[in-house]
Length: 329
Ligand code: AMP
Image (cartoon, rainbow, N blue to C red; front, side, top):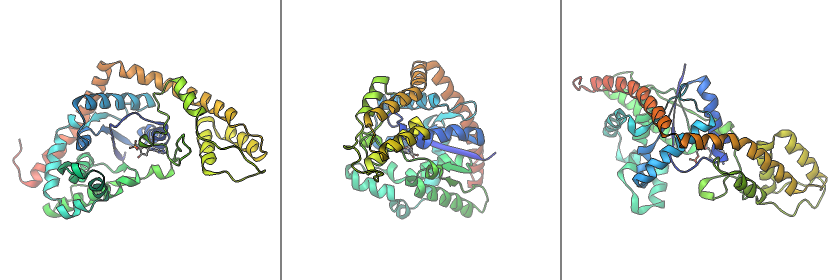
C-alpha cells in the first residue's frame, strides 16, 4: 500500500473550508493508503507561540481531526515534537541545503517581506524540516496545497542530493498529491471567493447552533435579481456554492429555479442552509467537545501515534547514520 504523510498546521480551529477542502478527503484516504498524520508543532515555532498556545492548539486540532472521522487505528496521528529522530534527519539535510536555494523559496521571500522583524533561521530552513518529516517515513505521496509545491520540490531535490552524495538509492522522491485541485473551493460568508481564518468569514466546526444560524443568516447577498434568468453576481454564486455543499444539489437547483424566475427569497434559502449546516455540524461539534474533555484519551492517541512513527523513524535514522559513516549507537 502506498504511504501518505500529511502535516497539520496547529493554527486555530477548523472551518468549513478545511472540512470540505481537505479533512473530508483525509478521512477517505485513510481507507485507501497507509496514512500518517502529524501535528506540525515544531514548524509552528517560527511564529513564536507561547507554551499555552502550543498546548491548547495541539489539543484543539487533534480533537477536531478525530471528530471529523480520522481513525487513529487506520491512520496514526502523532505530534511532530514527540518524534525526535526527525531532528537528526533535519540536521543532516541542513548540511546539504544551500543558502541561495533556501533564500529563493517563494514562501520564505514572502515571510521576509511580511515580517521583516522576524526572519529567523527556522523560516529559512523550513523546507529542510518538511523534507525530514516526509523522507523519514519514505512517503510515496504528500497531500499539499499549491502553496507547498515548492517545498515539495525541495524535498525531492534533497532526496536526490543525499542519494548522489552518498552513492546510494536510499530516499525515494515523494510525489505531491493534489487532491485539493479536485476538491471544492469553499466560499466565505462575506461573499468573497474563499473561506479562510484570516478573512474572518468562516463557519467553524465548533461554532454552536445559534452562531451557525446567525452567521449564515447574515451571509452577504444583494437586493435580488432584476431580470429573468439573470447571470448571478459573484456574491450570489458563492451563496449557491455554499448551498449546494450544505443542502445538496437538489436544494441548490430548487433555489436556482426560484432565482431564475425572480421569486427567490434569500432568507428562506439561508434558513434551509442553516438547518442543514447544523445537522452536519451538530454531531461533529459533540464529538469535538467529548474529545477535548478527555485528556487521557487524547494522550493515549498521541502516544500510540508517536510510537508507530518513532519505530519507522528509528529504522530510517539507523540506516542514514550508517550511510553517512557514523557508528551504530
Ligand atoms: P489553512 O487552514 O488555510 O492552512 O488550510 C488548510 C487546508 O484546508 C488547505 O491546504 C486547503 O486544502 C483547505 N482549505 C482551506 N480553506 C479552504 C477553502 N475555503 N476551500 C477549500 N479548501 C480550503
